[in-house]
Image (tube, rainbow, N blue to C red):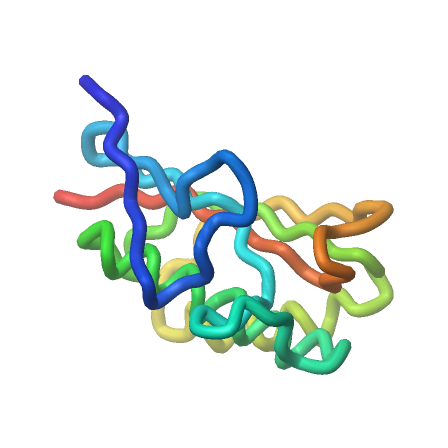
Length: 130
């Protein structure tokens, strides 16, 4: 079973040697997304964790859609925060994203730094074809 790259213009282009996501059979492995505007490639949110989280989740939504999946197909998420003190604000936006759905399993970790000075990065693993 070969890896299939998933790419969409509705999410920011990769800023390194990786794909926005890779499909392996019925599984979709989404790379971590930052709060980058898909058109300009610039960070959005002005340092506001809630605005950044919304943009990150919008970017992941676009990648999932391109892969033929939706937020209801997400099985696992990993959240990387530059400051765990902003966990509750991020978590509120995250909860709204999965409202009415079974939320995925998740790990949240604080990191020393994220690319482009981001406050949050999130990646997803999803399953399609169920």
